[in-house]
Image (cartoon, rainbow, N blue to C red):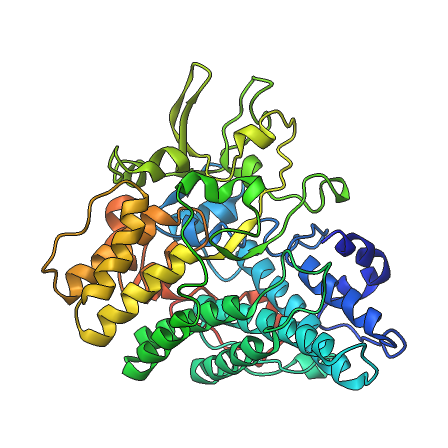
Length: 481
């Protein structure tokens, strides 16, 4: 991914353009290498800090789903983040605005890559064009999947915008957005089957990653519409992945630097604390870890997002994920409650002064596939079969827990999956999505955050008001007018 840094020079002006700017890049794309460089820049849009809010996963994108849930609360100085934690956010929340803008900036890059890769005819081999287009379809499908879950109806822009008027479009219905997502990910499945790039392997999406994400899209749409065919499609997609990966034997080892892009990780957003003078590092340690005075600790950890006691106390002491996920003391210093240490590889990065880290954000991993499979089987059969039990028990046994009791009905097993996902994926960007998909947002948030202003319409976030000023065609979600 070091080529990303080179691209920041060659494509800097383009990547910093506002969506409503006049774009002209007619002389940029001449060769296969131009496309490859630009594709790397598309991925850089996911991580690289900028003055307009940061790459999507640099700051708040990966925090939102845990903060607006029963997992975490905000202690930092940002009112916008505190509002998300307490469900008092409104249409002017800047965090939501930057997530919206960041998604569409990277979608714009994916659209450009798709168009320009079709205009160039001279490729060293056909698989180069296929893979580049597969990358674009994967990223576009991924981001529209997140957008439709976060905001519902969203503008569906499937071609590169080169003028202000081209970006002024209405919100497309959720059903249409899902059709586009599924189409994109199906294409990505096929086009990513062969990777012709020996130096572009780590951090690249694969056909299996596309299948797993496609399954999640089917599963989510099925829960939204009640369409049984979607659960069967999710099962089929998951079975393309099952057997090609294995669970990491030790839960804590998933997040070690030495295991990046390997093991049970299907796809991750790659960060680097040693390149780019801090602009390509992640924010895990700074945001999650406590401040320590030891040269063996992370000195500028701010602990802005902290786990609720309700979450911490829900773990059994025999659950190995508890120790791997939280930190309560360090070198004799006992903290005033737990912090999240999941992303801190103490052996590899114990003495860093400023919290820079090479740890990646894991977007898809095999345990997610396994638990989705259990969920799909439970939906298909209106209750768990042996395959569903085996799947969830594989996750529990890895954590040191006993098997689930037999004889659970449909809803009891569904609740068990939701609980298992909470213990498994703390601060991995899943919880709000899971609560909404399973219809448990209010039920789980209210007891965990008694002071939160949780409402029924919080199953969607508001369309950012700034976007509505710029595009009068955008309507607002219910509850936010």
